[in-house]
Length: 347
Image (cartoon, rainbow, N blue to C red; front, side, top):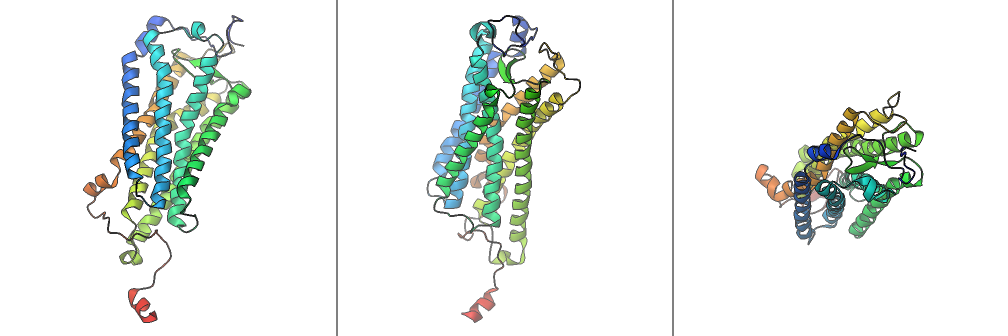
């Protein structure tokens, strides 16, 4: 155990930082402004989503349900973690005094893992849904698409929560991180720490990689149909283009924000000899890098709603006037269609 004092819980590592240094590293005004901008952005996206879901097709309603789950997850993540971090920066409370049993630290660790994995898993789920919707449009029951979408969102939430609870069951540990204002998984050399760090990082990386693969196939399929010989008879609806533009934006944001942190976790826990000392001390450079990568990752919760807000049809039509709402209302199909002359002869 790291703590020398037996009255302290298992989440405390030596950080060797004073209250003055903590006050210089993070300003409460910056943290509060960051959270307020993120909360306002997600509320705006939720209000736009509420209006867009009225009167939409079954396919679009299913996609908007996933988007609603993503934006709601980002909003709650900023609200819960922001409340803890802003309070810590505002009053600079001593975690040893406020939370000697590590209950708050364990809660924040679970929350950080949960709200970190959910956007990545939801991005992969949305990519899978669009892949099936574009390449196999008749393979899913349309009548229950929205209900099934909410059930899928619930399964993603349950999977992320189950992973976040693993350190409380003995696999890995949550600990107070530099500069003493947040808790996250421990980048130590213990087998449990290594296993949990790799599980978190590889699952997140796999979600990003799966999204990239499926979105690439979906975009290639749309382009082939749009520019193929049957383009005159069959053209992707502008809603299909809108959904793919939003999905690509979500994938790019997730990759840019999260991949540096995920790669850093893998690199750190696999380093030999271990970066963390037996007493739980990390090099100051490693602690600062982790803090920087975590701050970059949190931008994902602010940028996700703006991807939806900016990549709507009203905005896309200004960039590409050829996008028209007069496209065929039926689902996109890859089946070759007969020329109109042949169809007339058969009739």
